Image (tube, rainbow, N blue to C red; front, side, top):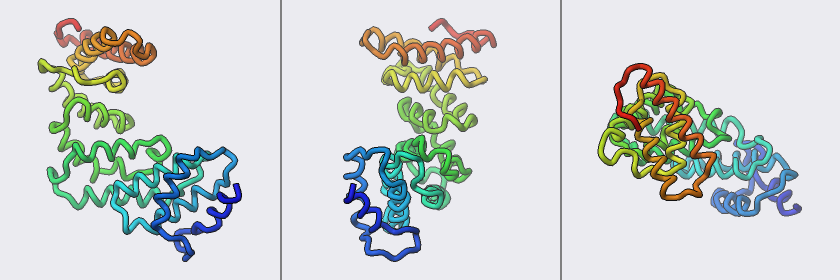
Length: 255
């Protein structure tokens, strides 16, 4: 506890303070603090000041390193008090700058998807406006056709709060679902994500729902001990979407 108190004293109290803290220490400290699994009683100023240290060193960090550092602070923080809003604004700005400075097709969406998924971290997704900016979303929409089913499922989870993108991602997934391979490489967790997205959509997505149900049956046949809860959620979401699509007269064959 004394060491943590001393660490808190050494960290910058705000982003403009000049302190004896060396920026090279920050990543190592964050890794060690994550491994320690700090108690809830830790000084709440620790995570805020760690955020200040990250911001001070942000000019020497690429987007991926900055994002990992912010997420690491969230993992250390137990009270939701750090990093502060400025650190998260800066993170969103860096994402927007990356996308604004790149022509459509210049960024590989396959490489961007894992980054966008980390931006959906529960502790930051509602505090980083940049993840849903037009500069970012235009690249995502443009590259949907280049993604495979697993990447599309990841994107559906990352942007479940952006209905327009969910609809377009499901439309892209429908192209895969209509092939011989279908959704055969998706795992149970990914099928659950797809089913959850299906249940919230009004558009005709029966081909995806039917493929999701086929994959779910296959997964349960392969592993009867698979999570009953996830399987039930998947089946429910896909069945609702399939029923709504049938009611709309899609003419799809049975799943």
